[in-house]
Image (cartoon, rainbow, N blue to C red):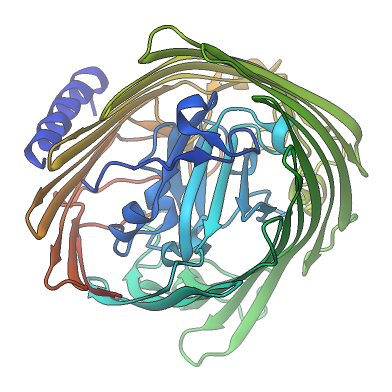
Length: 623
């Protein structure tokens, strides 16, 4: 694709489509955001670069997955190894998946071996809202928050009695069903739900030259159940218990190692099974009018299993296992000092691995302490954070951040921040046979950003310029420690509500690069990240019918070629989705989505497929 002229034409097309389909409704930001400072803060006073995905937006997602929803946000790009629910990576401001911290109800999740979270493993129907904080956040959340933080909140108890159910289907054998019930009774609040999804899918690899190429259908089965129970003991004390269980099995193209049956890609049925179990207990206490305390005890277990079978007779040909267990206890105390807030936090976390691969070390502990102070004044506000993390493998690390905002006018705020982060190598990077490098040390980085935020009535706009220098960057493909990586870019965003129509637009310029003393690998673009990405969403309400449209335009990306001896260019692409939500009766509606309208052929990772034009229709009932 010819870069400059094509991007201009595609952006023009996207703007025209956004105007023509007057989306999925603009994200309605909640009154407060927690992730940006660890304390509930009005969205108008938030200093960080934050996006919020609310329940109304999730309900228009249809068969879309969490990765699809996140990739529509500013500063977020995605990679996937084919089909609908295969292995996924999220790049937040150009940082890799392992450099993005993911929380569910305040508890870390993800693999300690690969370092990344399984975004394909988290069902949208079981999510209440999502908060995304872009930018280095290790001062607030500890190691790995180099690119930012994604926090997922599971479904909440509702007032009175609420219930809903849905059933749907579509092309490529897509099927979906779910139901939930929420309510309160006396001091008790509850939420219970389940969901089930499956598809025959598409072939995950599109390039016949790939060693694992097998032009078959690679499907998936996913089921989830969640429960939440709250007890408001009195005005000062509330207890809550949140549980989430998800099972996801998807097919992929590969062969086992070792390979006793001498299987080939064409004779192997390879299946990956991912199990996520997350449990969080929280005690909120208002000991004094000026003193709030929250004790969180969390447990997250992720099992990643691979099984290989011979297609002809189902004979078992081998397996793999990469399991991660995380235990976390966090005690945070917030002290209100007039309009200011002083926060003190202590945390203890353990992560351990259980694998069919022999790791020299299988467990580590991190003990953390944090102090933050939030200044809140009519015209300006600021947040200062200092944190220490004591890692049992690598020792003690101090991180800090300072951010501030100034109200230039009633509608315009200027914001700026600077801070440090660090990331310890994953167990794969350190100990995986034939790949691990025990000489690796934690990556250290310093990030800064400046921005403007505009908000007047139903119009919001933002502009952010950022730079993030990572010292001792670990190159994913070689597992070697380069001298430096620089993540820099610009994010522009806007949203508008006008009568029955709403619009949202965003544009990202990202130029993440790594630098090395080796001339052959110096000044390289980080793989799978596009320089230019444009997103547009629009929606219009016609009585009982809501029409929506979504457009994504991406420029090209680089990726390692199949032999890992050089780079290939993945062409840019444009994807258009259309849909409607029709309210048949007071409590019954039909959602229909036509995704990838133009049947665009594109790749997010070299040789791997993406879904072509597909349709999904669901019937939804709510009480």
